[in-house]
Amino acid sequence: RASAAPHCPGSLDLPGYGEVHIIPNGWADDAPPPVANIAGWDIVAPMDSRAYFGDACNAGVYSNEDYLALNLLGKTMKYSANVHGAGCGCNAAMYLVSMRQNTEKSTCGDYYCDANSVCGIPCAEIDIQEANMYAWHSTL
Image (cartoon, rainbow, N blue to C red; front, side, top):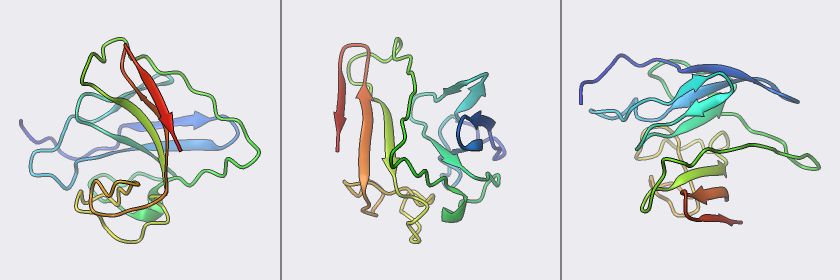
């Protein structure tokens, strides 16, 4: 896979919050995965990619202070997901993790953390959606 110059996919206006930047994963990789893109209100994340919500996006540089920390207490979160192309063995996921509060850079290079320490750093995680076109699952 050819490596493209790091870039920020863009931003969108999140009702009740304001401008949210999309931060892609993979800038720290020798062969980064495809970058998620924004198409209107859609965040299109190709296979093997992740997209994070941020208050800022600085191409090629990860900072825990750039990640968005939503205060959802007493609020409602609505979203829709098109999992039509996600077949068996594919996981179209949406997680809430505390990357902004994580001050330790993960082995993935981007401060990613979760309940399973996938990138070496544990943190609180809420799995809003783990799904494909045949199944859907959510955990706390």
